[in-house]
Length: 333
Picture 1: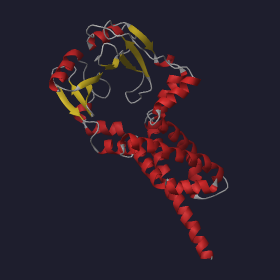
Picture 2 (picture 1 turned 45 degrees about the horizontal axis):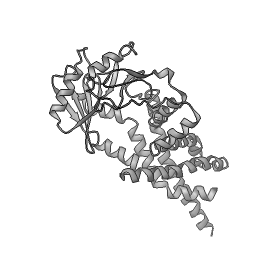
Picture 3 (picture 1 turned 45 degrees about the vertical axis):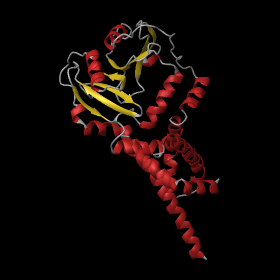
Picture 4 (picture 1 turned 120 degrees about the horizontal axis):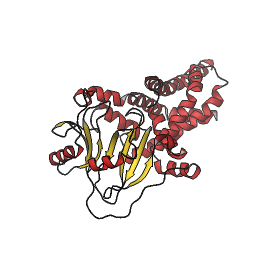
């Protein structure tokens, strides 16, 4: 086990530094993005009438060839409607005034330093292949996290002390990070053990879909105590529309209630309030939230930053400890 730990540690040292530091940088990604674009994320000053249909028509006219997928309504972080649109492999976030009168600006989520760091962290800049390689290397870190505490108990190095303290954190990061590489396998395993919400399906329907405003109006009866946060745009009559309601801040994406509707008839197919979610679905949501540290506010984010830095520091101190031991042996000879 000692030799396995040493060999894996040396082989994965550079990867551990890379994945630890990039992960630490991404913990505050969303707040940093908002701070970099105050023109889009200014805090609401006064409530204004929302005309989502007018805003959607404006976006479709201004961006021909693009497909709006979701509409995010004004919230604590922005006074504007935001339409997430795609074209081939491109994506755009288009921000429109609440009344739908004008486009305020746009943002390409795939550009910028933070987006580059995110791609480096998730796929090692290698696309789908890089994502799978990342998952395999994370499994190697998982073995280090398991074998380390057994070995570290008998040693009194700085590397041992930090490793013993960080082992549970590293173990959990590896397990939750692998979820993003093999999500279907995780969902299948969790679904075989814990109850999950059934997949909503509707028979092929004919006719035109209801407007976003009509869908929101009909959904209000099911969850009257909350304002809608996000709506999927009805682009196909055979695909259900999902409306999302926040139970926390927009960053806490695991604390949401959802409604699924038939886009043509407006019939509500499923209502899932956050407190009533099945254990399996709640666990799947927490896998993502706990990996990114988006619960518990600033203290948890700061702890996650320190955890990411510790992963990199473990790699450096591990190599240093190994080199020190080798030099000691050479001097003894």
